[in-house]
Length: 155
Image 1 (cartoon, rainbow, N blue to C red):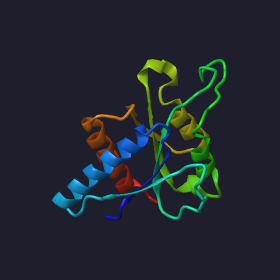
Image 2 (spheres, rainbow, N blue to C red):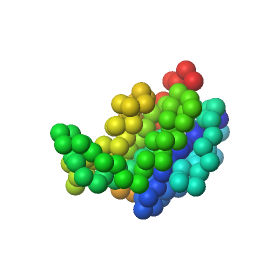
Image 3 (spheres, rainbow, N blue to C red):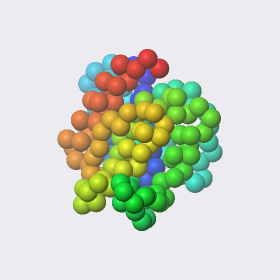
Image 4 (spheres, rainbow, N blue to C red):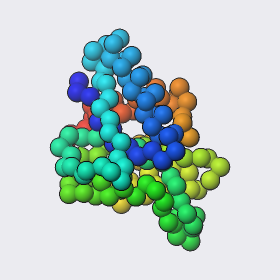
């Protein structure tokens, strides 16, 4: 199986840490069974040159908001906008198999709001969530979901 492509943004290092653990887990799964995919990942930042995505990928995005609750009085996203711009670039949204969100459950309705908004705006599924840096269980759960989603994809 070809690697699972991941595009992500990490502001305070939580998403980067999760992706690192996910990549290690994927490597171990691949060592145990060569049919299990590894990961190919790319961090998107303000310095990233936008390219046309030609292979299916998954997006990982944390939620950072400044003002509004995202439900009834608006929302102002903060610091993660470049990933949304990357997804919107040319036909990149067409290749996205889904989005995984992260955040802090203390923020109630705002928890993973950016991922849910990307799902609605760009027309791909909100697949999963995890809190902050995630847990070992989150890593295996999300890896299994990515593999299943990729196998069932028609892209």
